[in-house]
Image: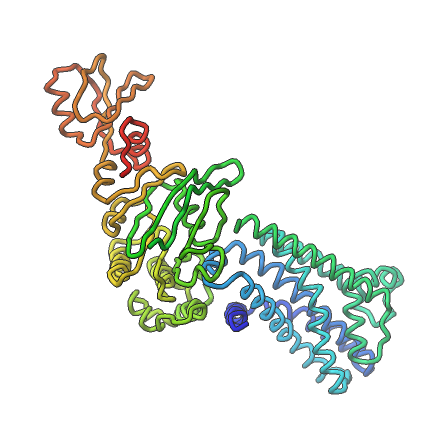
Length: 245
Length: 294
């Protein structure tokens, strides 16, 4: 555990030294917030709160898909990674450290969103709901972390960047992150429950203010977690087999 | 006492046999040089010994255990490839990171001083010169006060001065009782450091002997000439004829061979004397009748 924290600390240091990664995952949702949420839903307390929760989900998704997808793929190309495996620790602390660092970056990249929501919109949230929302961020990180890991372990870094970009936008649109709850165009309402983004955003909406979750979305989110975990596990073992057996 | 050992170890990568039934023992206090051309299997063997890879067949031991378990690696020091240092971390941070894995690490200031990197403590690794990166990479192998240090081509690409600084550090470690296994494709480096040389070629151990014995063998030259008939000459370890009518004589003393050739009065043309590559020398010797291995 001690070592996992050490690994997390140095991975965070590396991320902070080249802040493009944090910037990237913080910028897009913050910009979307400024251009779409503030002018259109900013005046309505409930609408603004739900829209902010949707942007938080968007941010968590893109931060995780990119930092794991691209980060893991790049790390695999570096000889430093095999070197750390000659140290008297298994691969577990490094892996755990990566997850901890990833979570920290996810939370960091949410700060601008929350600041914009609090100052420029009439979004309101009770302290208890805020804490619940914070915890929910960790929960909804799970499917997107697994998706990022699957991409990062399965693909070389150039392909990983492209795939990460290809998946994250349709997931955001299709899951209805860019519309108010239950007001997305019809075809999106139809497909949304089958996408992991939907279950995730519904959990966020439920956390920030009394949205009743669609059971289908939640079940599908569970299915996604299982499928993505299997994919990530397969990609990880295949990579281990290629490089370390 | 054996710190590490390979017993009839083979390793395949797909269709390629990178190591073929290799035996190696490194005893406490030895400084062993692993010598061989690129692609001979040196790195594969070292990767097996430090637990990065698993042998296809045979057995590998490190401090009496399986090198793939973290506990067996507690007294092992390994060098990362210099290109692998994390570019955005500072020199001191990289040392601290590696230190965190050991119970009693060498203090950072002491380690960096020993490798002449004190002034670079706060520099990012990406901004170091090639020599500084290499010195840092080697220094990392010594952080955890190891009993065995495995160095894969520690000085490749370094200038003479930087190479000597590193040699000094390796010698000092050995003088304090440390055990070293290092690979190189320079005979000179192995001669300067090692007492025992293991020569690897095409995945096999070609020789395992003292530096003196190996030097005598590696000093083989190739004397090529065109002649119709050649008498038997002393000191020739091997004779080859190629299709273009050339005769190639392998010998440890080319000067004496040429003198003998001239005194026989044989009519010859296009005389050439060339050093043989390590691999060539060893393959020539080992395919000849007498074995060189001790």
